[in-house]
Length: 108
Image 1 (spheres, rainbow, N blue to C red):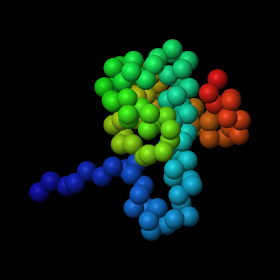
Image 2: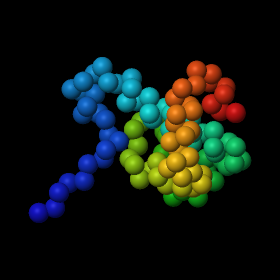
Image 3: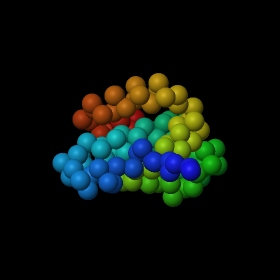
Image 4: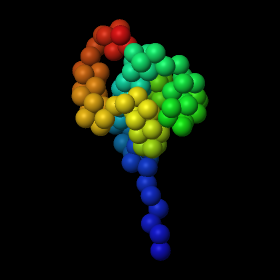
C-alpha cells in the first residue's frame, strides 16, 4: 500500500486549525518571493527566461515572486536551482530578508 506524499509547504490545513499562525507561515512565501525576484533581477533574467531555465511556468514564477501562494517544494527547488542558489544560499538570504524592514534593500 502506497503512502500519500504530503506537501510539507502546504500550510492551509494548519492555518484552518490555528489561524494565529497565518502571518508567520505565509511570511516564508513572501521571503522566498523576494529572494526569487531579487536574484532574477540581479542575473538580468526575465520571467520567461527563468521559466525556460527552471522548467516552471511564468504564472508559477509570478505567484512565487508575489509571495501569495505556498508553492510546492519542487517548484521552489527548480527556481532556486535555475538561479544557482544552494540551500545554504537560500537559508542565508532567508535570514537576511526576513530580518530586513527596508523593502528597497531586499530588491536591490
